[in-house]
Length: 130
Image 1 (cartoon, rainbow, N blue to C red):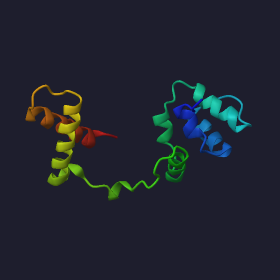
Image 2 (tube, rainbow, N blue to C red):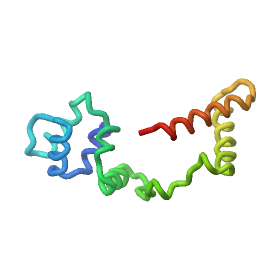
Image 3 (cartoon, rainbow, N blue to C red):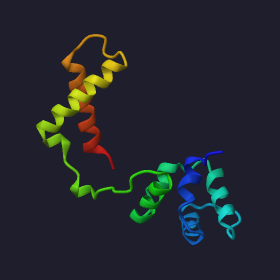
Image 4 (cartoon, rainbow, N blue to C red):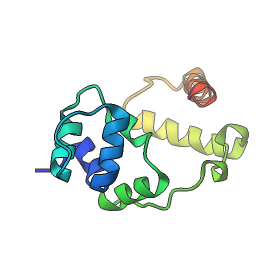
């Protein structure tokens, strides 16, 4: 049976690191065995996998990626291209968006305001995310 998202994340961490995170998140229960720690985290319904990922170090995130068979060659945030400032990238994204929406039957008619609204929402999200 495949691991839950939380268990897949926790599997890459040492028991010592799991104890540190358990303290940080207020996870109670047995703490001797790694399996007990993982079970304590997975039973906690208030703690999402996304929140746990936010507390991990870069090397831990890369190990999780490797464990899941994903490319761990993530780039630093500063090295990422600011797509909202580059017209060539925006044009390419618009073409990809048009194709994706068409494949899924939306919008029923080709209207530029739909694409414009989607880009405005994406730029707004980028601007205001924490």
